[in-house]
Image 1: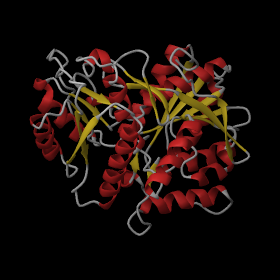
Image 2: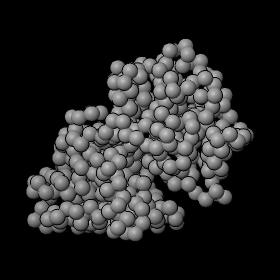
Image 3: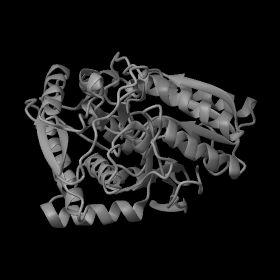
Image 4: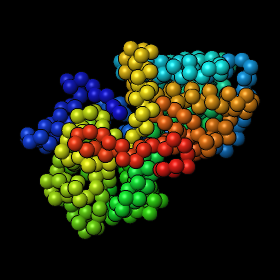
Length: 419
């Protein structure tokens, strides 16, 4: 779930293209270091803006504002408009469009949506969050980036207003700040449960030596321990092509010495995944005997499914039926495809609307937001956890003959598969 910059501005794309070419028999250059280009990716799966933020103090114990359901409920939407970055403008438009589409679907539930521009900065996010509360907002939806969301939530914590941010940065979650973005922990839990149920319980974790890679490794190890699996090895690689090449013999050794039946990779398509899945089979770790499992989406971009090394691999994705339905409705309404994370704004409004429909004055407090039944979003079911993170109903998919095939459907209610 990411967008490339233009090839001229984004060397990462050229690296990925070379890796794709290598998978089909051409040579692969091993000279380019692609660590600095991590910032060029706009991704949900990558832990986007991992800033040194502190979660909001959960000891504040503030009460959320009482909701008057006899009138339209003021909801603030904070979008990254005004940053000067073209991609932020596209994202801001998509978030507002999705939110308005959700409001149109609420029927008799009335929401007064008030849109504020953050300019993609923490300082402005703080200012507009305070302004939105002064204007009467009873809950805040957004911002996108982790440090911005943290600043907004801290600013309004004393008012009791809760913030549903579009970030997937779990380090900022807590108190009055909830994150809506998909998390490594949720994905790892779903895949670990499925892998163990299929007898793939002895795993070597392969991760990049950076913040996202280490977070992915921790998520996988925790999920496997919880599911009854065993990590028999954890091999890191530098975030470079040469680093991946040097790590391959260590991965092979860990698989053989640990009698591993699976390899769990944290890499995404814009990073090491194409090269890893090219080199590991060549080194003797065949996906036909050792299950490849991915923590990130292996179907984006669609060319990824053409790679020989990913055939048979497992990864998790949102309910494809629900996702396709939203995509179709959005395209009809706005004449363009939705942004990969635009649907999070729809999810936020859907949750807020469902709670307001109860008619309760405490509809938007922490207890209501974290109800165990959860909510129905554009990608399936989801619920907010008391710690500020979220749990989403995911399907497990496999790439077969260059096609994505769902092998374990996403649950339609909590308490089913994967939960």
